[in-house]
Image (tube, rainbow, N blue to C red):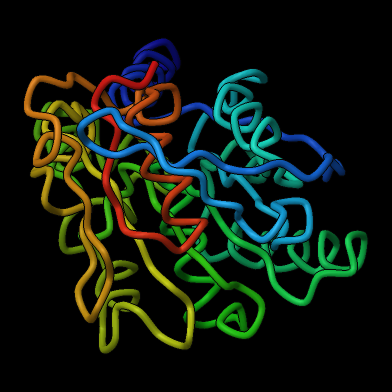
Length: 270
């Protein structure tokens, strides 16, 4: 019986969940950001000296692998941003609302350390839901300037529901998985009313090849958010769920969203 429970939990985690890492805020030097267009041409966009812009917190997803978010963090640092990576408590297995409370404390720590009034959040998978709960219900609307989500199941994912169908119980007892199931009470509360509260500038990024957020359009937000489908610009670009934090084209979208310029992905970025 114990073996069956362990196998069920392992299968659920393997099917649904995503890596995250932790790090501390780092200062970097000022740099000009090059904004790439969908044709591959570039234009210099001096992003107000990125080191003088808001600190960026990369909010990871579920099940942490220590280096999972270093590639995107390294790109941001190279562009002059002050970047830290936030790992969800208990690897994100627990209540997303509790993870949001922990994120609130972390944001305050980053603001105090850097002296910044606001931060920008670049979030992946479950991290997007954690961040939205923080903004919507825990005072984050006054402390976050820009929110960018990469493959976050804003309206839930059938993958979580399928785990129940396969006989693994209610997400093998994983609370966050239960909350990401389509129709969950958590998502009902999160998506009630305005999707994009406050003066936060909201951007979502999704990909047709996302194997964990199904249907793919469940990764979008309403109420004025900028929703970007990678393949709407770059039809031949293949990007999976984890690939959203590794892919060069996706990074050009993130960089443009943080810079506040028009979204024109570079389809040939590596």
